[in-house]
Length: 351
Ligand code: NAD
Image 1: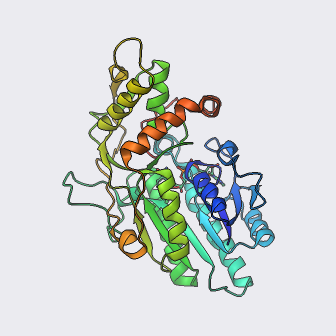
Image 2 (image 1 turned 60 degrees about the vertical axis):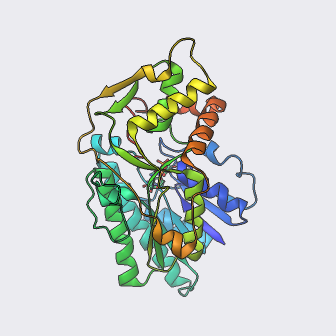
Image 3 (image 1 turned 90 degrees about the vertical axis):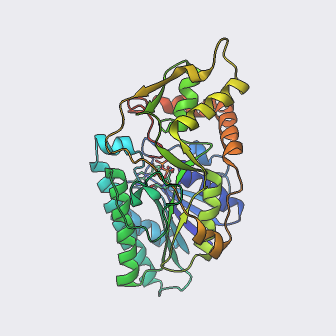
C-alpha cells in the first residue's frame, strides 16, 4: 500500500512511519516540521526506497492537492495536529487552524483526488484522534469511554479534535468518502517530545529540577505504549469497517502522582542519586484550568472485532522508556532549546 501519513515527524506519526515501512508499505510523510517535529524520529527508515518526505502545511490546500496528485496514495493516515493541551490554553488559534481547518483541507484534497481517481474501493482516509473528545470521567472504574460516549470536549485542544472528528464523519455521510476513525488514550514511549509529562519527569529528575505535578496529582490517565498504538492504527487502516470508529487504550489507569513515583523508582534503580530518591523532587503546582479528572478507554470493540491487544505492559513500557531517554541525550537535548519548551510545566499528559 502507498500511505500518505501526515504528522510523520511527530511522536506517534513517526512510530507509524517506522512500522509501516517495516511492514513493506510505501510511505509519503507530509509534515510542516513545527516546533514539535523531529526528522531524527524517522532517521532509521529515511534511506529506505519505501520512504518519501514532503515538507508541507495542511493549512495550505494547494500544497495538499499537489502532493495527492504527485504521490497518488492508496490510503491516508491523518495525524498532523497541534497536540499540547497547555499550549492550546495559552494560544488556541493555531489549534483551530491546524486541527480544524487543516483537517477540512485534508478531507477536501482527499475527496478531490479520490473522485478524480474514479472512487477506488480500497481507498481509506484514517483520522487519528484522542479520547479527550469525550470529556472527563467520574472515579467509578466501571465507567469508561466507549465509541458511543457523547462528545464533551473541555479544552481548546480537545474541542478542536472533536470538531475534526465531526468533519470526518460528515465527509463520509455527505460525500461517501471512505473513512475510519480512532480515538486513543495517552501515549508514551521513545521520541516523546520533551514538553510532555513523562519526558519532563525523566529529564527534570536527571537535571535535579522540580518534578511538577498538577493539583494533588489525583488526575487519572490511561497509558498506552506508542508502538502498540501504531500497531492498532495499521490494523484499523487495513481491517477496520468503513465509517466505523475504534477506541484504543491500554487499560492502564494511573494517577499522575502514581505515574511520577513509578518513574522516580525506575530512575532510582537505573541511575541512583548520590543521596535520597528522585521522588524528593516532586513539587505540587497550581492545577491546569479545566483539568479533566479521569480518562479511561473501553477497548472492547477493537479487541473483539479486530483482535487487537497491547503487547507491552505499562511496567515494561515505562522501563523501556526510561532506558531510551537515558541512552538518547543526543536526541532530546537539542529539542529542549526549542521555543516555549519548558516554559510551561509540561504536566500536560498527552497534550
Ligand atoms: P506531535 O505534536 O508529536 O506531532 C504532530 C506532528 O504534526 C508534528 O510533526 C508537526 O510538525 C506536525 N504538524 C503540526 N501542524 C502541522 C501542519 N499545520 N501541517 C503539517 N504538519 C503539522 O503529536 P502526537 O502526539 O504524535 O499526536 C499525533 C496525533 O495523534 C494527533 O492528531 C493527536 O491529536 C493524536 N493523539 C495523540 C495522543 C498522544 O498521547 N500523544 C493520543 C491520542 C491521539
